[in-house]
Amino acid sequence: MAIHGKDNGIMRLTPKNWISALFFALVAAWLGCGSGGVKEEAIKTTPPAAIEMAKDILQGYADGKPVESEFMRFDQIIEDAKKENPAKAAVLERGFGEIEGLMNTPSAIQKKAKEILAELESA
Image (cartoon, rainbow, N blue to C red; front, side):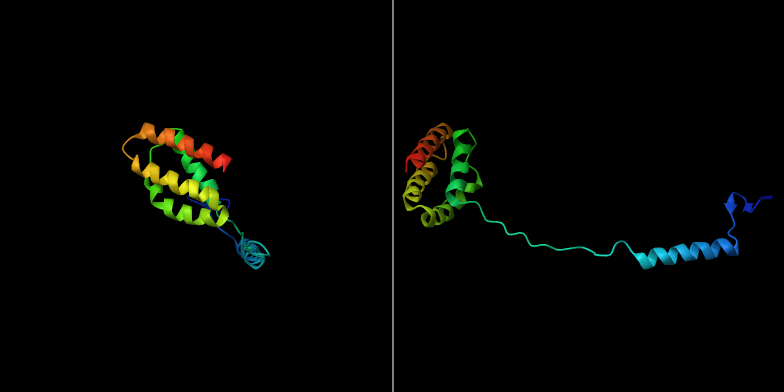
């Protein structure tokens, strides 16, 4: 039984409705999603300074954080620190060497990290 343009719950489109739907679809396609598209922008970032990175690592040790894989970057951090501040780089080189020798004693590493941080502040 069809009731006013409906047949089994499905509305039938008249030719006038088809033309209107087609018109709106074409207008939407012509306008698109926007006029400008995606704008790309390059953002320059600077890597953290080596001495600041070393201080962050040492502060973690001073707070009780265990030594993990970051110790493999000690040599690179020291080399980069030499370019920034040779005196502080010397403190880091000696201090990181001592920390590597204390790998099995976390409490000693914590104490040593605090000592190195204090030396870095005075250097």
